Image (cartoon, rainbow over all chains, first blue to last red):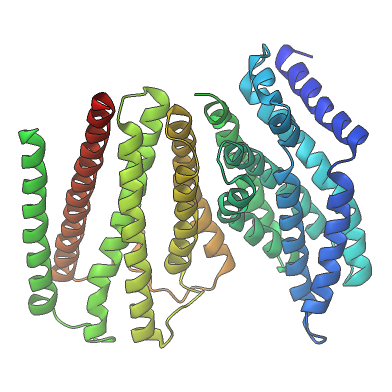
Length: 213
Length: 227
């Protein structure tokens, strides 16, 4: 394993370990996503189509991600750990990659509960929905981690994150809902993959500027 | 200082002349549209305004990129002013598009209109840019954040366009196709004049705002020196 990959692995392991020991965010995410699905059950009229429920699943995923992202840099902020990380002899983009990987793990854990709960409450899941969720996670966490780092620098942190994140997440929602409901999910999945690649590359390249002067 | 003022004056005069010529051409020279009649004339404002908004966003992103790459002084301010003008032209696009939708489709808002929805997404995105900018202390860190966000904007434009295309059926008229513009020569000429007029107007406004902002900074520095 070369230096860069080792840096990323160590940093990501640090985030996952912190979460496993403190259990700050993950239980809240699990509870939130189930609560959101229950709320959506009551928000949908009785004769609402199955398709509408699938749209709601995507809204639930997006807002759960938003909740998780809001806490992604909590430790860095509270104990000014970010300064320490920036001083560490590793590439700055490795910090972004590690944080993105950790966020993907947390969001994936929340979905591990959310998807079966959706199947139980609403309708059975098909393979294209699961594939779209997996692809969307990458894009959501890549962009989300970067804008969470941006929001960290501002005075209005919690307020700013959704404003920065939601316009950027609209294409993910289009791709995800499209893949879940369309007859030919191929092009929507392709679109999600394109989104992941494009935004992962520019987030990876620009993270250094977000955290340094 | 004098030369800078002269540029602004010249641009403003050019913009005024071009807008006048464009209005004259649109209303007195080109024939009415066979289908839509007089209401189609808004096309000569709506589309040039939209293209100018894209140009402003592009210019803002270019300045942002330059800021991150070479760090010339003032690139951050220029990027901000360009995006500010882009948002103004973007709002005008939404308004003119909405009026056109009302006149030709009978509704004020059409989710199936790719351009309108795209501008709504961009409007939300760049409004967040201002929120970001005004909630961070001025300084090099803020300049970096804004530059990165502005770069995300030009990537978001084609991605969102693709997304909205995927999500929609297409009732929006497609005038520019791969075979070139589907317009009469006279209409295309009027369209180009209108577009040049909007670009000149945007450039003039850009320089006026930039001059004002620079004056502001100079004044603040002088005050600090006196205090």
